[in-house]
Image 1 (cartoon, rainbow, N blue to C red):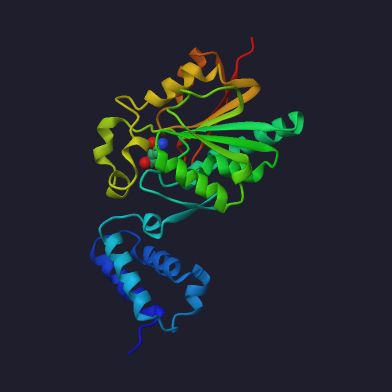
Image 2: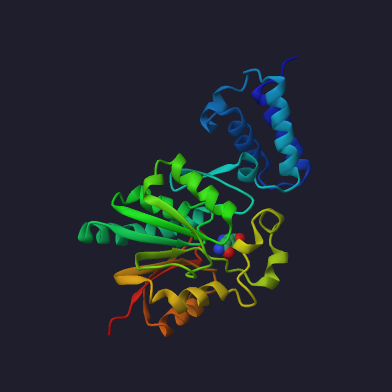
Length: 288
Ligand code: GLN
């Protein structure tokens, strides 16, 4: 008998449950719908539709990968972030919903600056998929962005994501570690740098530890290496009236704020993620 959407969904869920995957049913729905090119809503109404042998095979291969703890969106190769569809690669952190908060907080600043000056220059340090910068560009039409990364593969992924989302004309990339080799000043400096303490990496769940690139997670002994490097040179790269927006680890608000205050910045605002943890800091240059 031909296989149907429903029979494959049930088989997938059972295999993931047997593999001990939390959220087995939801992951099955995401994988099956993604691989068949259906929305989750369409999936519900097409339960009795037949699935070709080739598609069934692709679904089984994907489920096998998920059973091995590969994250759903790595298997699908792309993920939604702030309304954009972003391609992922092995050298890019998977964009998290919590990081959308950083974009949310920066949009009003970018809009105000663009309205006032007619343009807004953004630099995204450690851009990865390009998601943060591209989401800002999509929301602020007069803005231009530069994404930096130490990984050529990440930069290629970010450029492709710019193209896919119709933002290539306003987005450039530069191979660089934080501000090294960066010239000029920017209205918005933004980064979601690696901030996990090196020792903690091995304790992260396999989906993160095995599949997110270590370079995008490992913030050194105290998790603050990247913030130190950014804070040290930020003053030379920020325009008057500009802001710095950073994602931080849940327990790093005081330490990161102290680093930037000691370099002449003032904490303008902070925001919490969906779990109620401190996750975003915004600084401006202290003019006094
Ligand atoms: N938020 C990521 C995690 O929870 C870490 C991302 C980062 O280091 N910037 O694993």
